[in-house]
Image (cartoon, rainbow, N blue to C red):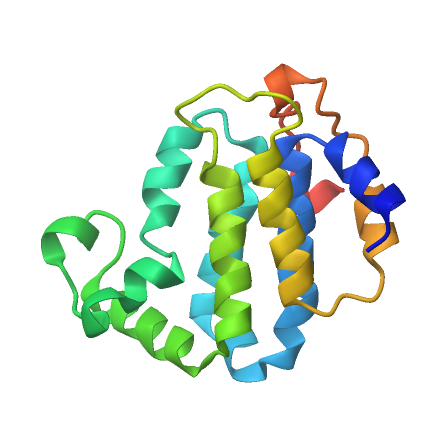
Length: 176
């Protein structure tokens, strides 16, 4: 990726960066048709989409954290009822585990980096251009093979890092 694209990304809000990462995941999904067609994929993408217009990101994080591949794959995929029960039934957990286990590590890492991008500053302030979220997005880009990156970046440049302390104003992901 060239330096000009990197500089453009620095000017995009955290919500915009998250949307770029999510759009990249959606573009990559057809490479994994079994996962793409599964209810697991639809639940995951639906929950991730809530980030860009959430007014309570800590609630979003609490719900979605339990869908993160690292969490689901932990402890050989054993269901912890105390931790998951309010957000994910055991049969849904097992389906997530099965689906994630079948995906390549690169794509699972891209999903995790997308989650981490959204969670990076939830309980702290954002400084500079948010190097942490910037790096997570660059990692998602490196882990995937997206051809039309300049167009994807352009799609979310409306969401400026100057808005709402770096987070950007909320927007509906599906309407952009």
